[in-house]
Image (cartoon, rainbow, N blue to C red; front, side):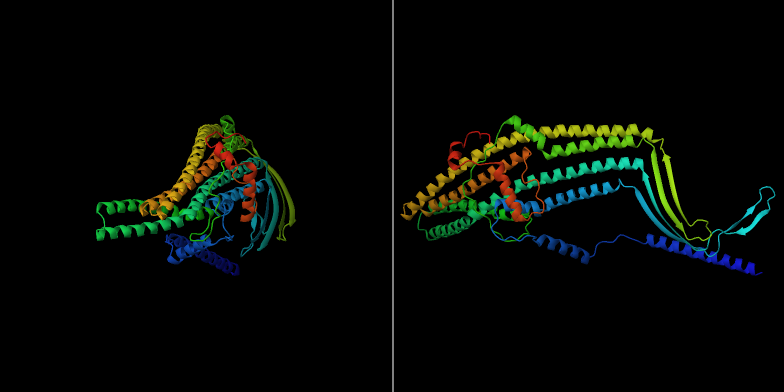
Length: 523
């Protein structure tokens, strides 16, 4: 009777537990169905905007003095957001390589667990011949048992595949470094162009402002003459028209130059609105000398361009994929060794060691291998075609860059000669104006022409610097030292200055005049 009551209680206990479990699963499923998409609230958006604004507005290394070209390049390399993205991508590639290294190690697992129940597990035996119960019910396990183990396992095939993947991850690191190098070259080009535009703006904007005021005063005088009818109407109206044309030219120059400094600040990663000064270089520059041997330039470009090197690394990754496919054809050999513990006192041994070896082979992998190999071959053909197309494009860039450099050199010489002639004209016109032998319109016109000549000279200089940087980039020349490390802006700027001064030289002013229209000699 007592045994029946106990079994009855156990029966109802099990049913209650089962129903509770069913109800819990149903509630969790219902909660999952009730999850709906929701938009970000204003506080979350505002927090993100404030965080981004603070990050953009902060300057890790404040500007302490006038910025020259080398410091501008250094700041762009360290703090330009595009450069930071490529640097982070390179760091990510290094971390992925580290992860690939760990996949080469054996697997070591530690496990611990607890098993419990409300009654003993047990069983009986039954005779196969007679069907009668052979032994009385017994158990070999306690109600509550704790267990643990430490096991080591190693799959030989997985090790081979992991080794191939690690080699591919190493090639991806080199691809990221080449992309980082390409971005550095592009930044140097952009900084050169923006820097000389900002220098031109710093130099001529005060003069443009003065000219704008002079034109406004002259227009007032001309309007006064028209209103009072001091001259025939056609003369002052023509005078007004010429002044308005000059005013339009002055405002065009102001519009083009007023944003140059802001553009330079953006490239350097300086927050918008930050005030800084520029080092004013001499108004005349020397022309770099480059060896314009077409054959050597083409060979150098095909050897050093980062875009072609990137494709070479991709080809190497594709070739390693072939090794991985052939490795998958081999059977997998897995060996394991481990130590175990169990708190069950009914066991004869509560501590024991295990060791095992297992071989498995997916026979169907033989049938999919040809398809994989064809895909790898097609990918290799695509990379070969990309390499050829890119090589042709790069060779074209070399020849175009050479022509642009020669044209920029001639334009700079013409702009320099024009500026000298215009400066002499302005000086002569000013002397005539001071002796009242010419009018205000003539003086203002020549002053505007003089400012335009200065702007043209600065633009030609910027074009020459940009053409030189573009030609060097087309050849695959390093724009900055290969190892920048953790240098600050001042140290990096000094390294770039030393690197540039050691890698090229310039002509003196006398030599520049005599060789302005000649092909540069080899350096």
